[in-house]
Length: 117
Image (cartoon, rainbow, N blue to C red):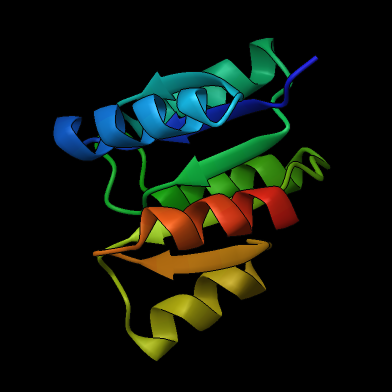
């Protein structure tokens, strides 16, 4: 059974690109456009990985991450965002993210990081 990846990304073009490429790599992929939907989806279905944008509507990505970790979730989280200051990276990792990539990004590198997680 292929791994299930939840993609939380509000930019339609990036979300569609991620879904297309990850499905092409053999993963089951679900995509949502806001933080509240990401949190709700994870409550209903257990994913194997969450690719999480930070600047999401309805609930910021860091809040999604905080709530997941407060529930005791060990779900691997890869933050994929344009917010790429050192402070942002440290904050995301300190809150429990497993990896962090800045936009723009390489699909080849993203797929390698997904395999690693």
